[in-house]
Length: 201
Image 1 (cartoon, rainbow, N blue to C red):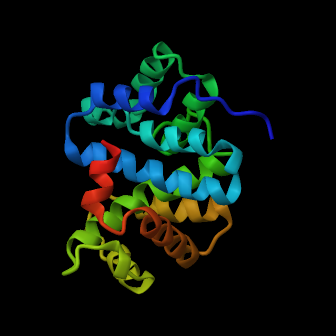
Image 2: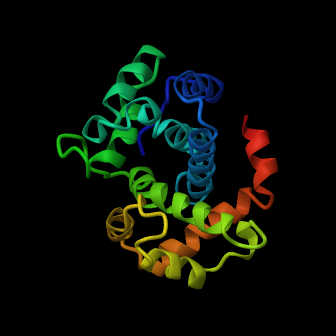
């Protein structure tokens, strides 16, 4: 596999994220997707774990400032990342997760890009479901519970079930397998969500 270089350090990526995102929800989502990506990188591409993480950290870089223009999502981010020294492969990987919004953007091809596409919205659904549980912890969350929330279109209505299904198809995984693997990913780094978020700041 060709060498992947982000052109920007994790610290630099975090500074860029915080320059354009002030909402705690968006910052937490970014670090959750970062850690999820790193979890899967350790299985599928361990040599590029940091690259996968930076892709996850910056995937929604421009959403807070431009969420009213979903068809342009990641186009603003591309300019900011390039100005910060980010590489074309970093920008491409990030832009693949919004190819459903904008067909002119590249489709996911690398395993990393498929994982981002499949899990980005799913982590949000899991997070929303976990908050509703008495424990408020992902550690006792199950695939059965997730399937109930997934089928209830009124719950976390902004989460696209079609994108999650398409992501599973891209990976060649059953939906239940994607659910189980993503829950396991989140359990691996967030046994105590508040401590995890504080550590990422």
